[in-house]
View 1 (cartoon, one colour):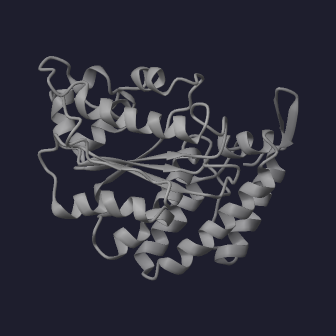
View 2 (cartoon, helix red, strand yellow):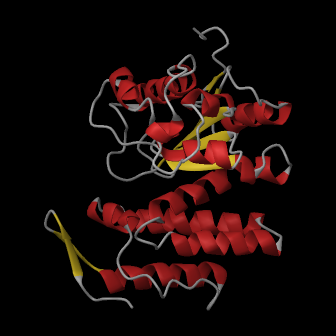
Length: 285
């Protein structure tokens, strides 16, 4: 049941029911009436909270509406459409809304890879790129060296998720560090530490750092199952609807396939000239 409470965050107020109605109206406009149903949402999603607080509410809705229209046109099968509707409904969920939004971004940006069979969506784990509070990309990468394994290490081991997609979404701080260049260094450093930090460690178990994993695999076992990391950055420049992809190949992967290798490289090409591809072949020590 939708409440009419006001949420107050640092003096900023918004009405939950009004925000819910805005989202439902937008979904009805894109998909038609009675297709998307978010009637069970009881409190406002953090995505809307962040964006409204930053006065990005209108821009967010415009960009999200355009994104949903693109995805609707791309997804021609009924099965794909049903999956899309479920994710769209999840965006309004206060517990998983931000991650669902990241999935939409991932599908929109990488759909050509899924459509032509270069990348299988079932082999992809999606997470959000950590926010930072420091301008030093290397220091932040050191602090976030376990980010991937903490968030999706269980999926890598239990569900054969061989590629991790991290989405840097346009809320909270626009940059992870100080600027676009520092952010790119941060993304590369996080990937490198994910691939190398624990690869020679024969003691650290995955369950010690991932709350959702209960097996006996080591962190290094998960690293060997990981083909690579794709970072989708939505905060490049001053345009919040601009997207750049960075792809990082894991040279220590034991399951790398030609398709996965191609997917990592092509992901950069779906962004623009600012995208970075790194295979770490000459930086593997």
